[in-house]
Length: 225
Image (cartoon, rainbow, N blue to C red; front, side, top):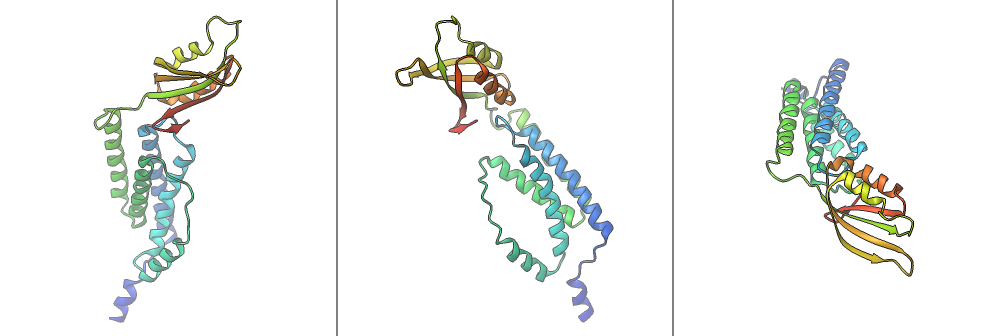
């Protein structure tokens, strides 16, 4: 009886087990990061978040392997990790979902259910990809509010920024213009429909490099890019 209780709270782990579990968690984490990149609906995905998803899967694997079936370790790790405070606000609900996605796969790798981990990573990722690409649930966001400052000059008949809007936007419509002080500087607001949402950062860069344009911003649902 005493030996049975002793075995209950022991989790035999070899170096090979640890290495193989971390490798599988790394592979699954990379796949999760790729699916995040393919399904992300914002104007530009954060590179550091992709690295965090991969690391999260591996770290969770280590935590699960350390805990094993030892209740004392479990309560100890819960107490130790409760002191961690996360200061970064998560804006997208999709990010929260992918965090739990990586956590679940990391836990699966931690208990060495590699077939389930790989199969679940691929199945969930493919389902998310199909939903995103087919707009099965919602339409892809492509309409934005573009605001920038423009200084009119008598030298150019056609503003240079119009060529940039034509290059990156399917449609654009001026909705508001106002003067800034007593100068020729104006704030212009356009509703734009982007040809490719992923090129929004390039749109802002080329717009700011246009003659007379400063302080360019792109908004969607009160978010600024």
